[in-house]
Image (cartoon, rainbow, N blue to C red):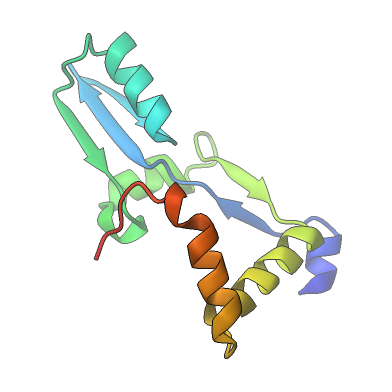
Length: 118
C-alpha cells in the first residue's frame, strides 16, 4: 500500500457530523461549531430537525450517497505516507500490548473529551 500512498492514490471521505433541516432546506455540518453557526444564521435558532451521524451505518442509502459517495458533494482528504505512519503509531499506542502508553494518552487527552458514549 505504500506505493499507492506515495503516488497520491489513497483518499478518505469525510462525512458530515450533523444534518440540519429547516423549512425544506438541508445543511450539513462537519463540526459542533459549524452546526451552531448554521442553526443561528440559517435557522433563526429554531431548526426543524438536527440529526447527528455517529457513523456511516446511521445514514440511509440516500444520505450516504448525498454526503459521502457523490463526487459532486463529497469531502475527500488525501492520505499521505506521513498520515499512515501517524495512524500506525496511534494504533500501536491505543491497541498495543503496552498498557502504560495507553494510560498516558488517556490522562493527557481526557480533558478534551466533552462526552463519552458508553
